[in-house]
Image (tube, rainbow, N blue to C red; front, side, top):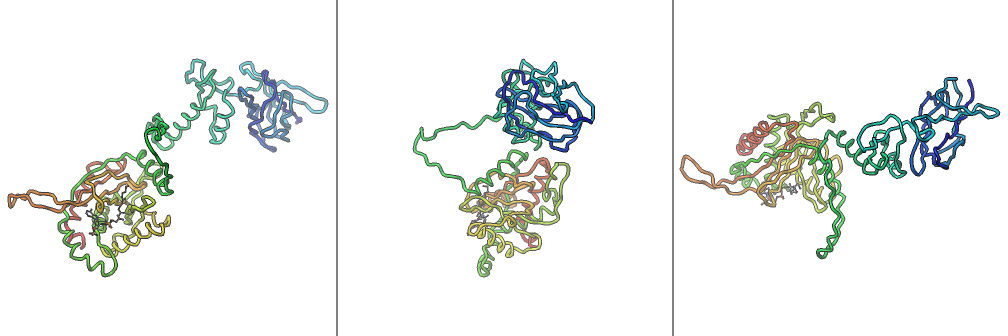
Amino acid sequence: MTIEKILVPDLGGADEVDVIEVLVAVGDTVAIEDALFTLESDKASMEVPSPMAGDIVSIDVSVGDKVSEGHLLLTLESSGVEGKAENVTDQNDKVTSPSKKEDQPAATASPVKSSSPDGGNQVKSTGPMYAGPAVRRVAREFGVDLTKINGTGDKGRITKEDLQQYVRSKLQSATGNSGVGADLPEMPLIDYSKFGDVVETPLSKINKLSGSFLHRNWLSIPHVTQFEEVDIVDMEEFRQKHKSQAVEIGVKLTPVVFIMKALQAALVKFPRFNSSLSKDGQSLIMKNYFNIGVAVDTPNGLVVPVVRGVESKGLLALASDLGAMSKKAREKGLSPADMQGGCITISSLGGIGGSAFTPIINAPEVAILGVSKSYLKPVYNSDTGSFEPRLTLPVSLSYDHRVIDGAEAARFIVYFASCLADLENLIL
Ligand code: CAO
């Protein structure tokens, strides 16, 4: 066993360089060529590899220090196995400086890779890795290994754009969204005041939160929307008959609660609609509970409270729950628990108007039902040979096509419509 001092090697002309990474700690055992430090000059970064195997006894520099050739970096107790190192000895201990390898322009110049000179994407096993301090700093902050990036700048230098492109492609492959969102042109920065008077208003907290979830769901889920029109003549007759009874107990009997009941019946018959994809996308988690989220429009933005146990509640109880949830959403604010555990969501714009829309799935659910305003539709009656006005409810079912096939979605919505149209059966 000998005590070795590892010094800053020949820096290939650079005078003072920064220590930007200390890659080992006292007590570590290192092998020959293990990276010990990263040094950075104005023009390049380089790793200092260990010229021999051994145990680190002391580290004599810290991140941020400026060092020059010959500066003591660390001391190690060597087991005697040396690499291609050039040894320099002082009076007391043996002092070692990593040798300059023939194929490495800078003395230690790290193991590394860069693009081929023609800007191609070949990975070289040796050669300096060129990246400016700003790029290296961002890479360190995000834990990006720069040796994995092919620089397209001058002499294979890794540019800010190379780093951004690398991170973007990693994010896309991590979410399985390769191709989605890639290479989208950036939104232009426009000075709208050039065209007229403008006022900038900040988005609410809810706007920002729901906006990013909606964006993610829109980009990451292959949506298909299936439309249907439901005959709600019987439902509306029933609702009008019991409306005042509901008011007496302080609840509002609106179409949404009937829709919740019919939806729950359809979830029982088509259980894939009551599922979520596992995180790895390899299996489905099937749910044996029936909680339905209802999108509520509040002054601060859209929120989705969840009404639980729909299968065990009657219409009045559901109306009471929905009323309480929408009041809480609009007045006091919902707790995170109020918005969790949903199986499917209803987004009803029926109280406002519009003929149809394509709602965005509220992941990790796999479907959402959009409800538009009912209207009187002339329907041909072949028995009487005439057109009759029928109260009709337009609905739009958006579903995750990774989980649900088009035919199943069509069956689901037809069944849902039959449940809502056949009120007696629904209530029983
Ligand atoms: N067709 C015709 N009329 C309808 C209807 C429909 N599909 N749905 C509701 N109505 C009627 C109701 O019956 C009520 O009329 P009456 O007072 O005469 O009975 C009126 O419209 C208002 O209903 P409401 O909005 O108070 O109650 P609701 O149960 O229908 O809806 C809720 C509750 C919370 C869904 C609703 O208030 C809401 O916030 N809707 C907006 C949801 C939203 O923003 N979705 C978009 C998400 S994507 O951005």
